[in-house]
Image (cartoon, rainbow, N blue to C red; front, side, top):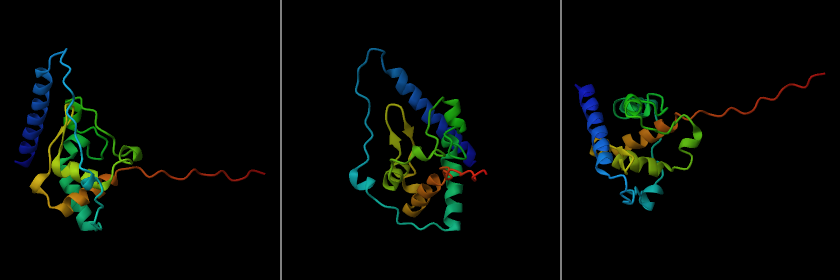
Length: 156
């Protein structure tokens, strides 16, 4: 049943994005919708210390609510993204989130993100703040850790 609700939600999101694109006329110079994260939200720091249990719950929540678009490993190639030809960031790349604060990620997950090109639904009241903070930690965990350059031993 949950999969049907998720699939239906994805269809509604994609169809509303498509209908929004169709309503614009080719010569229409309407300013794009701005998505602004309040400065006080961006400055928030993550108060949560992860535990194995909290990260397991974050992984489960991500699998239900995020993976369909962002991919199971954060590559931005979930079924909805691929089918809708959406270009989402690859969270496995450390550069993808390096300029975003934990507070910004929290705000986007909690409130959603809506612009002319993005219509990401929010977690809203479905998740408690600690659950969202754990999602922030989990999403950041996708980034590949750059290994230090290996030095070659001196050859005689």
